[in-house]
Length: 279
Length: 114
Image 1 (cartoon, rainbow over the protein chains, first blue to last red):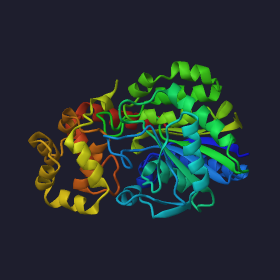
Image 2 (image 1 turned 180 degrees about the vertical axis):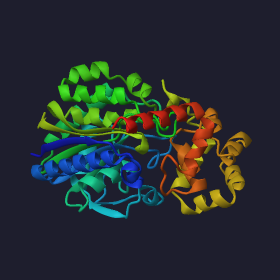
Image 3 (image 1 turned 90 degrees about the horizontal axis):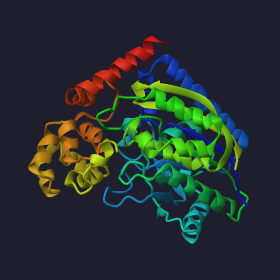
Image 4 (image 1 turned 180 degrees about the horizontal axis):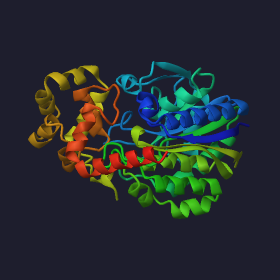
Protein backbone atom coordinates (compact mmCIF):
# COMPACT_ATOMS: atom_id res chain seq x y z
CA UNK A 1 0.00 0.00 0.00
CA UNK A 2 1.10 3.54 -0.67
CA UNK A 3 2.23 5.71 2.21
CA UNK A 4 2.28 9.45 2.85
CA UNK A 5 5.81 10.17 4.05
CA UNK A 6 5.94 13.96 4.10
CA UNK A 7 3.57 16.91 4.35
CA UNK A 8 4.46 20.55 3.92
CA UNK A 9 3.05 23.88 2.79
CA UNK A 10 4.41 27.06 1.27
CA UNK A 11 3.34 30.31 -0.31
CA UNK A 12 3.42 30.36 -4.13
CA UNK A 13 3.55 34.13 -4.62
CA UNK A 14 4.86 34.95 -8.11
CA UNK A 15 7.14 37.49 -6.45
CA UNK A 16 9.16 34.58 -5.07
CA UNK A 17 10.59 34.12 -8.56
CA UNK A 18 9.35 37.04 -10.68
CA UNK A 19 10.55 39.97 -8.57
CA UNK A 20 12.34 38.21 -5.77
CA UNK A 21 14.96 40.90 -5.19
CA UNK A 22 12.35 43.61 -4.60
CA UNK A 23 11.87 42.30 -1.06
CA UNK A 24 14.39 43.08 1.66
CA UNK A 25 17.59 41.08 1.76
CA UNK A 26 16.45 39.64 5.07
CA UNK A 27 13.26 38.24 3.50
CA UNK A 28 15.17 36.89 0.54
CA UNK A 29 17.54 35.02 2.83
CA UNK A 30 14.69 33.73 5.00
CA UNK A 31 12.80 32.44 1.99
CA UNK A 32 15.88 30.76 0.55
CA UNK A 33 16.77 29.14 3.87
CA UNK A 34 13.23 27.91 4.51
CA UNK A 35 12.74 26.45 1.04
CA UNK A 36 16.18 24.81 1.25
CA UNK A 37 15.13 23.23 4.54
CA UNK A 38 11.85 22.04 2.99
CA UNK A 39 13.82 20.49 0.15
CA UNK A 40 16.26 18.86 2.58
CA UNK A 41 13.38 17.30 4.53
CA UNK A 42 11.65 16.29 1.32
CA UNK A 43 14.73 14.50 0.04
CA UNK A 44 15.20 12.82 3.43
CA UNK A 45 11.64 11.44 3.22
CA UNK A 46 12.49 9.84 -0.16
CA UNK A 47 9.10 10.29 -1.83
CA UNK A 48 8.44 8.78 -5.23
CA UNK A 49 5.80 11.31 -6.06
CA UNK A 50 4.61 14.75 -4.95
CA UNK A 51 0.86 15.27 -4.77
CA UNK A 52 0.72 19.05 -4.89
CA UNK A 53 -2.45 20.93 -3.95
CA UNK A 54 -2.78 24.42 -5.36
CA UNK A 55 -5.60 26.53 -6.72
CA UNK A 56 -6.65 27.27 -10.25
CA UNK A 57 -6.26 31.01 -10.93
CA UNK A 58 -8.92 30.86 -13.66
CA UNK A 59 -6.31 29.46 -16.02
CA UNK A 60 -7.47 25.88 -16.57
CA UNK A 61 -11.17 26.47 -16.24
CA UNK A 62 -13.38 29.39 -17.27
CA UNK A 63 -15.36 31.25 -14.66
CA UNK A 64 -18.62 29.73 -15.91
CA UNK A 65 -17.50 26.19 -15.20
CA UNK A 66 -15.08 26.01 -12.28
CA UNK A 67 -14.90 22.57 -10.65
CA UNK A 68 -14.14 22.31 -6.98
CA UNK A 69 -11.13 20.01 -7.57
CA UNK A 70 -9.14 19.01 -10.64
CA UNK A 71 -6.46 16.33 -10.93
CA UNK A 72 -3.72 16.49 -13.58
CA UNK A 73 -3.52 12.98 -14.99
CA UNK A 74 -0.83 13.49 -17.64
CA UNK A 75 2.27 11.30 -18.07
CA UNK A 76 4.28 14.52 -18.08
CA UNK A 77 3.68 18.07 -16.96
CA UNK A 78 5.16 21.18 -18.54
CA UNK A 79 5.19 24.67 -17.10
CA UNK A 80 4.96 27.56 -16.78
CA UNK A 81 2.11 28.18 -19.19
CA UNK A 82 2.81 30.53 -22.05
CA UNK A 83 2.75 34.19 -20.92
CA UNK A 84 3.47 33.22 -17.30
CA UNK A 85 7.12 32.37 -17.96
CA UNK A 86 8.04 36.03 -18.36
CA UNK A 87 5.96 37.05 -15.35
CA UNK A 88 7.55 34.36 -13.18
CA UNK A 89 10.99 34.86 -14.74
CA UNK A 90 11.21 31.11 -15.20
CA UNK A 91 12.44 28.86 -17.96
CA UNK A 92 10.20 26.04 -19.12
CA UNK A 93 10.38 22.93 -16.94
CA UNK A 94 9.21 19.36 -17.42
CA UNK A 95 8.22 16.99 -14.62
CA UNK A 96 7.16 13.37 -15.01
CA UNK A 97 3.59 12.76 -13.92
CA UNK A 98 2.20 9.67 -12.25
CA UNK A 99 -0.79 8.93 -14.43
CA UNK A 100 -1.66 5.65 -12.72
CA UNK A 101 -1.87 7.24 -9.29
CA UNK A 102 -3.63 10.34 -10.63
CA UNK A 103 -6.28 8.27 -12.39
CA UNK A 104 -6.70 6.17 -9.25
CA UNK A 105 -7.39 9.34 -7.26
CA UNK A 106 -10.05 10.44 -9.77
CA UNK A 107 -11.78 7.07 -10.02
CA UNK A 108 -11.52 6.08 -6.39
CA UNK A 109 -12.80 9.54 -5.53
CA UNK A 110 -15.85 8.82 -7.64
CA UNK A 111 -16.42 5.53 -5.87
CA UNK A 112 -16.12 7.26 -2.50
CA UNK A 113 -18.48 10.15 -3.26
CA UNK A 114 -15.82 12.75 -4.10
CA UNK A 115 -16.30 14.48 -7.46
CA UNK A 116 -12.90 15.22 -8.98
CA UNK A 117 -12.49 16.69 -12.45
CA UNK A 118 -9.36 15.88 -14.37
CA UNK A 119 -7.20 17.27 -17.15
CA UNK A 120 -4.74 15.31 -19.24
CA UNK A 121 -2.90 18.54 -19.98
CA UNK A 122 -2.89 21.04 -17.17
CA UNK A 123 -1.53 24.58 -17.47
CA UNK A 124 0.61 25.91 -14.65
CA UNK A 125 1.01 29.46 -13.41
CA UNK A 126 2.60 30.40 -10.10
CA UNK A 127 0.56 27.88 -8.08
CA UNK A 128 2.56 24.84 -9.19
CA UNK A 129 5.55 26.56 -10.83
CA UNK A 130 6.92 28.48 -7.85
CA UNK A 131 6.97 25.48 -5.45
CA UNK A 132 8.41 23.31 -8.23
CA UNK A 133 11.19 25.86 -8.73
CA UNK A 134 12.19 25.62 -5.07
CA UNK A 135 11.33 22.03 -4.10
CA UNK A 136 11.74 19.98 -7.25
CA UNK A 137 14.09 21.97 -9.49
CA UNK A 138 15.75 18.89 -10.97
CA UNK A 139 12.39 17.15 -11.49
CA UNK A 140 13.62 14.22 -9.43
CA UNK A 141 10.14 13.62 -8.00
CA UNK A 142 7.13 12.70 -10.12
CA UNK A 143 4.18 15.06 -9.81
CA UNK A 144 0.42 14.74 -9.45
CA UNK A 145 -1.00 18.28 -9.44
CA UNK A 146 -4.39 18.86 -7.87
CA UNK A 147 -6.02 22.27 -8.15
CA UNK A 148 -8.97 23.53 -6.21
CA UNK A 149 -11.30 26.48 -6.44
CA UNK A 150 -10.48 29.14 -3.86
CA UNK A 151 -11.50 32.21 -5.75
CA UNK A 152 -14.80 31.81 -7.62
CA UNK A 153 -17.92 32.02 -5.47
CA UNK A 154 -19.09 29.87 -3.87
CA UNK A 155 -15.71 29.30 -2.23
CA UNK A 156 -15.64 26.02 -0.29
CA UNK A 157 -15.34 26.20 3.48
CA UNK A 158 -12.36 25.05 5.56
CA UNK A 159 -14.52 22.22 6.93
CA UNK A 160 -15.13 21.01 3.40
CA UNK A 161 -11.43 21.20 2.51
CA UNK A 162 -10.58 19.20 5.62
CA UNK A 163 -13.22 16.58 4.78
CA UNK A 164 -11.82 16.25 1.26
CA UNK A 165 -8.33 15.91 2.73
CA UNK A 166 -9.50 13.10 5.00
CA UNK A 167 -11.13 11.36 2.03
CA UNK A 168 -7.94 11.76 -0.03
CA UNK A 169 -5.90 10.36 2.86
CA UNK A 170 -7.96 7.16 2.62
CA UNK A 171 -7.78 7.12 -1.17
CA UNK A 172 -3.99 7.45 -1.18
CA UNK A 173 -3.60 4.81 1.53
CA UNK A 174 -5.72 2.40 -0.49
CA UNK A 175 -3.63 2.82 -3.66
CA UNK A 176 -2.41 -0.64 -4.71
CA UNK A 177 1.27 0.27 -4.99
CA UNK A 178 4.15 0.86 -2.63
CA UNK A 179 4.69 4.50 -3.58
CA UNK A 180 6.01 6.90 -1.01
CA UNK A 181 3.97 10.09 -1.35
CA UNK A 182 4.68 13.65 -0.24
CA UNK A 183 1.68 15.97 0.00
CA UNK A 184 2.39 19.66 -0.52
CA UNK A 185 -0.01 22.56 -0.14
CA UNK A 186 0.72 25.79 -1.99
CA UNK A 187 -0.90 29.22 -1.60
CA UNK A 188 -1.62 31.92 0.95
CA UNK A 189 -0.91 33.44 3.32
CA UNK A 190 -2.89 36.70 3.49
CA UNK A 191 -3.22 38.51 0.17
CA UNK A 192 -5.87 39.94 -2.08
CA UNK A 193 -4.75 39.34 -5.68
CA UNK A 194 -6.14 42.07 -7.90
CA UNK A 195 -8.54 43.41 -5.28
CA UNK A 196 -8.60 46.92 -3.79
CA UNK A 197 -6.16 45.73 -1.11
CA UNK A 198 -3.83 44.22 -3.70
CA UNK A 199 -0.72 45.48 -1.87
CA UNK A 200 -1.88 44.62 1.62
CA UNK A 201 -0.63 41.88 3.92
CA UNK A 202 -2.42 41.03 7.17
CA UNK A 203 0.44 40.11 9.47
CA UNK A 204 -1.79 39.63 12.52
CA UNK A 205 -3.97 37.10 10.70
CA UNK A 206 -0.96 35.25 9.31
CA UNK A 207 0.75 34.89 12.68
CA UNK A 208 -2.54 33.79 14.27
CA UNK A 209 -3.08 31.14 11.56
CA UNK A 210 0.48 29.87 11.83
CA UNK A 211 0.14 29.67 15.61
CA UNK A 212 -2.93 27.48 15.14
CA UNK A 213 -0.84 25.15 12.97
CA UNK A 214 1.94 25.14 15.56
CA UNK A 215 -0.58 24.11 18.21
CA UNK A 216 -1.62 21.15 16.08
CA UNK A 217 -5.21 21.26 17.27
CA UNK A 218 -7.22 20.59 14.14
CA UNK A 219 -10.61 21.04 15.78
CA UNK A 220 -9.61 24.46 17.12
CA UNK A 221 -8.34 25.57 13.73
CA UNK A 222 -11.54 24.49 12.00
CA UNK A 223 -13.64 26.16 14.68
CA UNK A 224 -11.79 29.47 14.63
CA UNK A 225 -10.45 29.88 11.11
CA UNK A 226 -13.65 30.39 9.17
CA UNK A 227 -13.89 31.32 5.51
CA UNK A 228 -15.17 34.73 6.62
CA UNK A 229 -12.01 35.27 8.64
CA UNK A 230 -9.86 34.29 5.66
CA UNK A 231 -11.76 36.64 3.37
CA UNK A 232 -11.39 39.50 5.83
CA UNK A 233 -7.63 38.99 5.70
CA UNK A 234 -7.57 39.31 1.90
CA UNK A 235 -10.43 38.46 -0.40
CA UNK A 236 -9.96 35.88 -3.12
CA UNK A 237 -6.41 35.05 -2.07
CA UNK A 238 -6.12 34.20 1.61
CA UNK A 239 -8.58 31.36 1.00
CA UNK A 240 -5.77 29.63 -0.87
CA UNK A 241 -5.00 28.45 2.66
CA UNK A 242 -7.76 25.93 2.07
CA UNK A 243 -5.04 23.81 0.44
CA UNK A 244 -3.14 23.95 3.74
CA UNK A 245 -6.30 22.91 5.59
CA UNK A 246 -6.75 20.02 3.17
CA UNK A 247 -3.20 18.79 3.78
CA UNK A 248 -3.70 19.29 7.51
CA UNK A 249 -6.13 16.36 7.37
CA UNK A 250 -3.27 14.09 6.30
CA UNK A 251 -1.17 15.06 9.31
CA UNK A 252 -1.18 14.82 13.05
CA UNK A 253 0.27 17.11 15.70
CA UNK A 254 2.02 20.47 15.44
CA UNK A 255 3.67 21.90 12.35
CA UNK A 256 7.16 23.38 12.32
CA UNK A 257 7.07 26.95 11.11
CA UNK A 258 10.23 27.42 9.06
CA UNK A 259 9.69 31.05 8.13
CA UNK A 260 7.17 33.86 8.01
CA UNK A 261 7.55 37.13 6.16
CA UNK A 262 4.85 39.83 5.84
CA UNK A 263 6.25 40.56 2.41
CA UNK A 264 4.35 43.48 0.93
CA UNK A 265 6.94 43.57 -1.86
CA UNK A 266 5.82 40.07 -2.93
CA UNK A 267 2.20 41.10 -2.31
CA UNK A 268 1.57 38.16 0.00
CA UNK A 269 2.09 36.99 3.52
CA UNK A 270 4.79 34.43 2.88
CA UNK A 271 5.35 31.30 4.93
CA UNK A 272 6.72 27.78 4.90
CA UNK A 273 5.73 24.95 7.25
CA UNK A 274 6.46 21.23 7.58
CA UNK A 275 4.55 18.62 9.52
CA UNK A 276 6.46 15.86 11.26
CA UNK A 277 3.77 13.28 11.82
CA UNK A 278 1.38 11.81 9.27
CA UNK A 279 -2.19 10.79 10.12
CA UNK B 1 -18.19 38.32 2.19
CA UNK B 2 -15.15 39.88 0.52
CA UNK B 3 -14.48 41.74 -2.69
CA UNK B 4 -14.31 38.54 -4.74
CA UNK B 5 -18.04 38.04 -4.27
CA UNK B 6 -18.69 41.23 -6.22
CA UNK B 7 -17.65 39.54 -9.46
CA UNK B 8 -20.29 38.93 -12.10
CA UNK B 9 -19.68 35.38 -13.28
CA UNK B 10 -21.74 36.08 -16.41
CA UNK B 11 -19.84 39.24 -17.44
CA UNK B 12 -18.45 38.96 -20.99
CA UNK B 13 -15.07 40.41 -19.92
CA UNK B 14 -14.57 37.45 -17.59
CA UNK B 15 -15.22 35.04 -20.45
CA UNK B 16 -12.97 36.97 -22.80
CA UNK B 17 -10.05 37.05 -20.40
CA UNK B 18 -10.04 33.28 -19.99
CA UNK B 19 -9.44 32.92 -23.73
CA UNK B 20 -7.11 35.89 -24.14
CA UNK B 21 -4.69 34.65 -21.49
CA UNK B 22 -4.38 31.31 -23.25
CA UNK B 23 -4.08 32.49 -26.85
CA UNK B 24 -1.21 34.54 -28.27
CA UNK B 25 -3.28 35.61 -31.29
CA UNK B 26 -6.00 37.03 -29.04
CA UNK B 27 -3.37 38.75 -26.91
CA UNK B 28 -2.04 40.44 -30.04
CA UNK B 29 -5.59 41.48 -30.93
CA UNK B 30 -5.99 42.94 -27.45
CA UNK B 31 -2.98 45.17 -28.13
CA UNK B 32 -3.87 46.12 -31.69
CA UNK B 33 -7.69 46.15 -31.78
CA UNK B 34 -9.20 46.08 -28.31
CA UNK B 35 -12.45 47.63 -29.49
CA UNK B 36 -12.95 44.96 -32.18
CA UNK B 37 -12.07 42.18 -29.77
CA UNK B 38 -14.50 43.58 -27.21
CA UNK B 39 -17.23 43.62 -29.84
CA UNK B 40 -16.58 39.99 -30.75
CA UNK B 41 -16.87 38.90 -27.13
CA UNK B 42 -19.97 41.09 -26.67
CA UNK B 43 -18.55 43.38 -24.01
CA UNK B 44 -20.73 46.35 -23.10
CA UNK B 45 -19.47 49.84 -23.95
CA UNK B 46 -18.82 50.43 -20.24
CA UNK B 47 -16.71 47.27 -20.00
CA UNK B 48 -14.69 48.23 -23.06
CA UNK B 49 -14.10 51.76 -21.76
CA UNK B 50 -13.02 50.54 -18.33
CA UNK B 51 -10.47 48.28 -20.01
CA UNK B 52 -9.35 50.96 -22.45
CA UNK B 53 -8.90 53.43 -19.60
CA UNK B 54 -6.98 50.86 -17.51
CA UNK B 55 -9.19 51.58 -14.52
CA UNK B 56 -9.26 48.78 -11.90
CA UNK B 57 -12.03 50.39 -9.87
CA UNK B 58 -14.44 50.67 -12.81
CA UNK B 59 -13.58 47.15 -13.93
CA UNK B 60 -14.39 45.69 -10.52
CA UNK B 61 -17.51 47.86 -10.13
CA UNK B 62 -18.77 46.28 -13.35
CA UNK B 63 -18.06 42.77 -12.07
CA UNK B 64 -14.69 41.86 -13.61
CA UNK B 65 -13.18 39.14 -11.41
CA UNK B 66 -10.47 40.81 -9.36
CA UNK B 67 -7.88 38.23 -10.38
CA UNK B 68 -8.24 39.24 -14.03
CA UNK B 69 -7.68 42.95 -13.38
CA UNK B 70 -3.88 42.88 -12.99
CA UNK B 71 -3.77 40.43 -15.86
CA UNK B 72 -5.59 42.96 -18.02
CA UNK B 73 -3.08 45.61 -16.99
CA UNK B 74 -0.24 43.27 -17.91
CA UNK B 75 -1.66 43.08 -21.42
CA UNK B 76 -1.10 46.83 -21.69
CA UNK B 77 2.19 47.13 -19.86
CA UNK B 78 3.93 43.78 -20.22
CA UNK B 79 4.45 40.92 -17.84
CA UNK B 80 8.04 41.24 -16.71
CA UNK B 81 9.14 42.62 -13.34
CA UNK B 82 5.61 43.10 -12.09
CA UNK B 83 6.76 44.68 -8.86
CA UNK B 84 4.84 47.19 -6.79
CA UNK B 85 6.62 49.96 -8.67
CA UNK B 86 5.62 48.77 -12.14
CA UNK B 87 3.61 50.92 -14.54
CA UNK B 88 0.75 48.41 -14.45
CA UNK B 89 0.38 48.74 -10.74
CA UNK B 90 0.42 52.52 -10.88
CA UNK B 91 -3.15 52.07 -12.13
CA UNK B 92 -4.03 50.64 -8.73
CA UNK B 93 -2.52 53.63 -6.98
CA UNK B 94 -4.81 55.88 -9.02
CA UNK B 95 -7.91 53.70 -8.56
CA UNK B 96 -7.44 52.88 -4.87
CA UNK B 97 -5.21 55.65 -3.48
CA UNK B 98 -6.22 55.12 0.15
CA UNK B 99 -5.78 51.34 0.24
CA UNK B 100 -2.52 51.58 -1.69
CA UNK B 101 -1.12 54.32 0.54
CA UNK B 102 -1.92 52.24 3.63
CA UNK B 103 -0.14 49.24 2.15
CA UNK B 104 2.93 51.25 1.20
CA UNK B 105 3.04 52.75 4.69
CA UNK B 106 2.87 49.23 6.11
CA UNK B 107 5.74 48.15 3.90
CA UNK B 108 7.84 51.11 5.01
CA UNK B 109 7.04 50.42 8.66
CA UNK B 110 7.91 46.75 8.34
CA UNK B 111 11.17 47.48 6.61
CA UNK B 112 12.14 50.18 9.11
CA UNK B 113 11.47 47.87 12.05
CA UNK B 114 13.90 45.24 10.78
